[in-house]
Image (tube, rainbow, N blue to C red):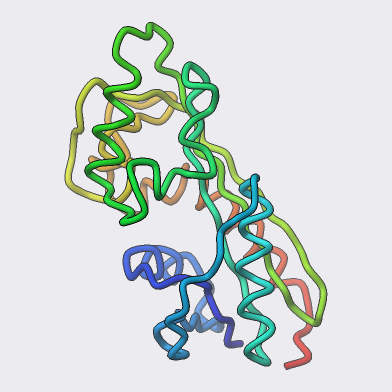
Length: 195
């Protein structure tokens, strides 16, 4: 089964493909030569995932899924939220995003946070949503070199290390994206595909 995964992010594609069963082949947006800047103008994580899925589905006759993820920090009114990738500006600079978040958290005792991923799947002309949440807290400074995005400053609940200090398999087993993907994979294993 071939499914388009609506991302240009090579790290994300590798992470997700490793979680997929062997019979599912992912095509990234680069694989299908789609280099458009897909609009992410919704006010919710769910809305952005659906926007991306629909945008791709209108251009290709294949099943497609897209995910959107936000980091929610209650002390900052759940910022960065839907603006997580562009928190410090439109260039999506992960280092600047982390620095801005750490600066805004200065003086706050509550450093709790959670990641939320929503996957939107369009298959057989029907839309399905799968959600994953990972609770944790924001560290005082980046730790580790693995992963991407906010991983160096996010410590998942029950652990003494950041996402960026974990091997990919360990992170995937507990992460927001891993939880949402497990729901997606379970769903895909139980249906018939028309195309």
